[in-house]
Image (cartoon, one colour):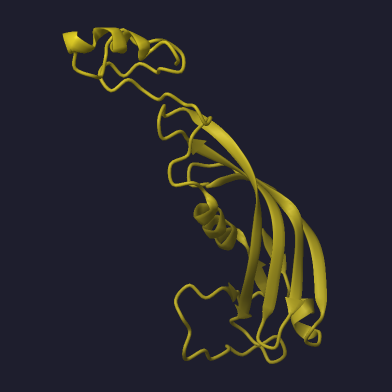
Length: 173
C-alpha cells in the first residue's frame, strides 16, 4: 500500500490524485486479508491528506466457539501525512513538536497506508466477534462445540425440584 507522492508534493496546494487500492495480504501478523477501493490524495500546505473508502475483509476468531471466520466491511479512512524531506531542497524538514503516531512520507517520498489501514481496521472490529448471531459456543464442562453437537453434560448443577425445567434447556437450541 505504498504510493510515491513526489509529483503531488511538487504541485500547488489543492492538487488531487486518485488511485485504486487492490491488496491481498498473507502472513501471521496481518489483520486484514484483503483491501480494495478508491483512494483520493489532496495536497495540503503541510503534506498530503488521504481519504479512502475501502472494502476490507478480516479473518476473525469467534469469541464463543473459537471457530475461524471472515467478516467484510467498509472502512472510511482520513489521515494527513507529512513529509520528512522537503521535495524542493532535499533537506530534512524540522518538526519540533512532532507528536507520536504522526503519519509521515518517507525520505523517498513514499506514502505507506499499511499502518493506517491496520489501525482503522482494528478500531472497527467488534470487541467480541461472533461467527453468527446465535452462536452457542463451547460447553463449559466438556468443551464440546454446541453449534455442531448437543452436549451430554449440563453446565448447571442438577436440582431435582427443577428437573422438568432442565429438560427444556436444550429443547430450543
